[in-house]
Amino acid sequence: MTHSTSLNNKLQGKVAIITKGASGMGEAMAHEFAAHGAQAIVIADVQDEKGQNAAVSRRLDMGAFSFFLQSNYIFFAFLAPILLLLLLLIKQRNKLVQSKKLPLIGNLHQLRDLPHRSIQHLSDEHGPLMFLQLGSIPALVISSADMAREIYRTHGFVFSGRPALYAAKKLSYNLSTLKFAPYGEYWREVRKIVILELLSAKSVQSFQVVRNEEVALMLDSIARSSGPPVNLSELILLLTSNIVCRVTFGKKKDGGEDKSRSRFHEILHETQDLLGGFCIADFFPWIGWIWKFNGL
Picture 1 (tube, rainbow, N blue to C red):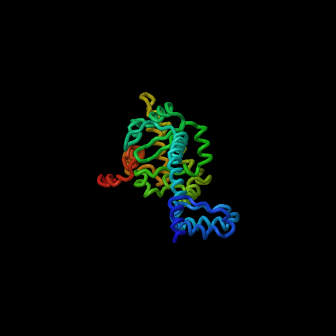
Picture 2 (picture 1 turned 180 degrees about the horizontal axis):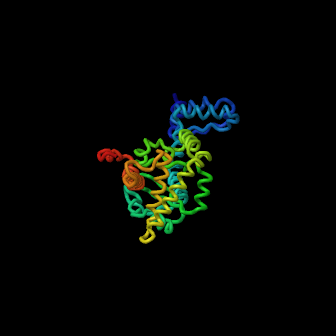
Picture 3 (picture 1 turned 120 degrees about the vertical axis):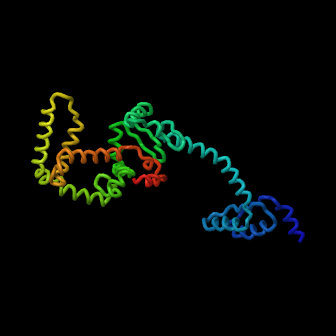
């Protein structure tokens, strides 16, 4: 009892260091010291790896490791702010240049009626590689031909697809056409069919008569309207639409040439407006359900 009381007085709240741990007496002494209130126990001179692991495991099991835990907490308390600062500095250093954005809408307010002009002005200010936040959609803007070539050469697979625009989903039967389908096995199969049926040398040669006739009609139309200015955009649209109609449907008009052209052009213009116009669901996909109320 006297020996036990003496050990309690000596070891209570103290750190006990046991030497000669390799002799096999270390574990037994550690048990005794822990039972008498030692705050921490160090078993020294354990040479072999098995003995070291046993000593560490035994000390943890005894719950007498508070000193070392407290020391680690203090160490990490000082180390954590330093690590956090380093991470912030590294992140800031690697961060892409970004134009000032507003909450929720990001940089949408900086894209005006002519987005390509707005992006050009932003690139002149922030450099050829910059980051824009378009609503909830992150966008990487590349304005350098060399940089674009390098990115597509290294990460071509990542940038090989098109964005899944809301209008494109509706007009292409949920992105099932060659133009809007995401890159993958399905796209490769559709591409094979298009090349075989429409773009093979034999198919292209078979449509040469159609192209020649339509080009001749366009030139004749320009010659007849030599007085007033000629709208080349409208003429080229008419040329391509007539070629597509004849190749696809085998005919150019239905119920009158002017009526057919007018209706077909109306559909083309409406399609272009839908694909190129602003759609809030493209920038905030989580509120795309709103468009269902107006029939889209």
